[in-house]
Image 1: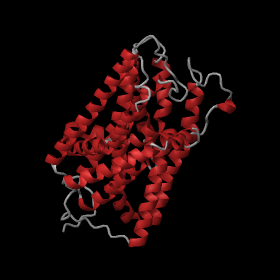
Image 2: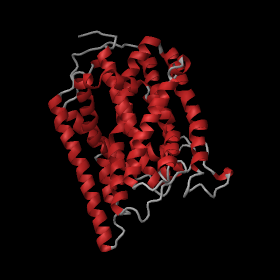
Image 3: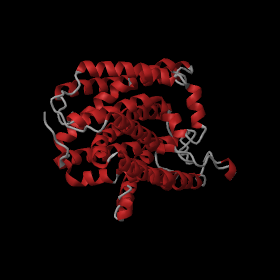
Image 4: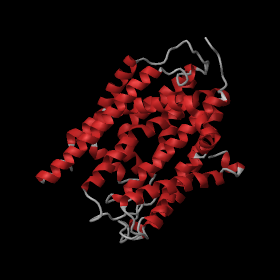
Length: 386
């Protein structure tokens, strides 16, 4: 048994690098939403007559592909740091600090970032909110802040568990990392849960129309997120991230890529059938959607484990700058909805090809979000929160 209560600089460095990449992908995920009928926070970029059906078909798959692992990774890494923090600070102090670190950004994001995004987005051409009165605009929606809300709930559950069992944070490296058998069983079980949750369409549609709209888009994955959060907690006790089996990771990563490319192929085939035979199968591909939900955990297992292994091995390739970006990633996540609105209004209506518009918006929003978050963190009071 190896007892070690301190985390090395090396481990913190590569996990911060992963956080930076993941939040960058969150921004990349949200940019294409502006091309869909509902738009992004009131901004809708019209693409009719500029691109074919394949444009939307590709971005439907693109959103699915990125979402299949970015939020699982965020919950996994979040869980990894919880046991050590609770042990170091105690449950009461940990929850006090956590309430501040989550509560203040949540309130700021809800009432300032999200609401100002709607007010600014409403001024854009072709905005779906253009003709709504102020009383009808969907203010005070949590949007991307659903992550903070769910994360706080998971923190409370873990702290309740510590209170019941006692605080016994001891690192035991004799416990091996999960084997292929465990990975397969968890992926299959959670796959069936994902399918069952995705069929609750009335519930998710209702949540999307309420203040908790973010949960309407992500709530069907909550059991997968909970599983990964608590697996992250468990991994902290045994340093599983550092002892991950590379052969197993490579095999599962190949499976994940195969599943993602299969989804892409199925989507393109259905789109081609829709255009060729004038059917609506692509608009209502129920079997494809259910299959996509079933393989959601399997895709996540391969991609997130590969990212952990790769960054752990190659953290020196990016050095300190990506780690610093990871430290700024929390602030970038909270403020990026409003930054994206401003960027979309600047580059979305100047006649660029939609593909170029999407690429420019991703790059500019990522740079400005991380840059502004870094500037805010120069203030010690802000740095303690973000």
